[in-house]
Image (cartoon, rainbow, N blue to C red):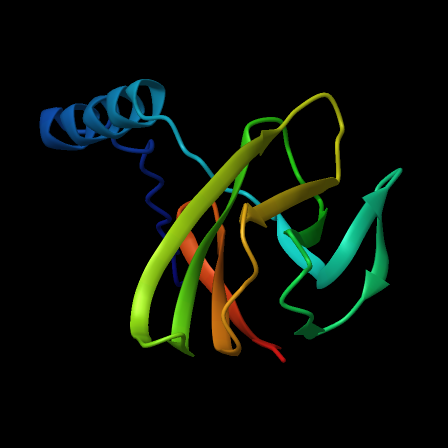
Length: 149
C-alpha cells in the first residue's frame, strides 16, 4: 500500500525588507506630483488679423505696412495653465541676420483652446525673411517662416 503525503504551507508573511520597500514606494507616489499633459497644437497660422478665435487673412507674406502680425494658435486637449509662447526673429531683413525681435506668451484658462500672439512695429517692416518659433509648455513645437515683401 502506498501512502501519499501532501504538505501544505501557509503563505509566508512578507519579510521586513518587502514591507519597507512597499512603504517607500507608497510614500514616493504620494508625495510626487506628475504633470502629464496631452495638450498639442492643432493649428498655427500667421495672419493680418484676428477675430473671434480665427485668423483673418492668413498669409506667410506680409506687406511692409502691416503693422501687426498675428500668430493664431489652436491647442487640442489643453488643460488649464497650458502655456503658449512665440519668439520672433529677423532671419535676413533690413541688415539684421538671425536677430531676436520680440517674444510673446500667454496661458490658456477656463477651457480656452486658442490664443493670438502678435508682433507689432510702429514703422514699416524691413523687407526680408523672418521666423517665429512656437512653444507649448516651454518646449519648442515648431517654426514658421514668413516674409515681408
